[in-house]
Image 1 (cartoon, one colour):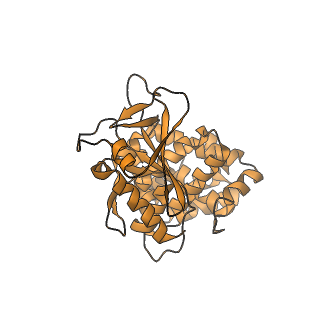
Image 2 (image 1 turned 30 degrees about the vertical axis):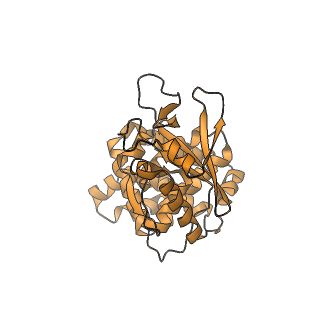
Image 3 (image 1 turned 135 degrees about the vertical axis):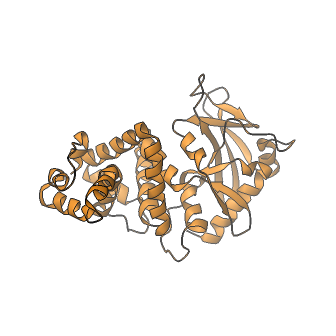
Length: 305
């Protein structure tokens, strides 16, 4: 990843939408780049895989801050509008070559409306696609400043993990699902204390959204249970650094599935519980780990061990 190049791309995009950048939250693959460039410890060597798409999250209702709407700002900054699909209004993307990269920008919003949940909506001149669970990403957006001194907002890492875990099974393309799993691995393991903070934030969001947490954990546990060797090789292939390995990532996913168990056990038995739990799992399976501190049955989750 070329840090200076990515900084220029992010900065130019933010400048291109003028004052509306105070209401746009960057998500998708570019969120990982922003975490690494501006929010994590700069000594960390791990860089995420690159992307050419900026997913721009925008609330359904935002105040008028300019006589020019977002589409006008993008047009004046030489972004070209392209239409995709036959919806009314049609899905659109905005494209501009920046530093040799054909950057594509699309706008997304939540589907928290009584009518037309799945219909595209025009917000301040741009067409936004509604996505389920996206309201999580509006709750705790994180501010950042580019190296070019441009302010922006990015999806919080906890919300990013939560949303990907909730939606990767809905992907029409397996390659995109594998990329989502790679992103979960990257955010939860490769950014030092920032990764630790992301996991803590994820757990807090799960506590506030227990039904969605159950879906999140079921999605991961089912994938772990059913993943083939080919699936694992395709997930590993997403990481250009070669650091992603089945064994360690499998353990990471298990922790995301079982974190509530581990928290409760530590509270009941003290900080040494988690080590005892995993030793029990290694020796005799999940039932042995549970027997060392927790009397609870996990149903489908048992299948991941």
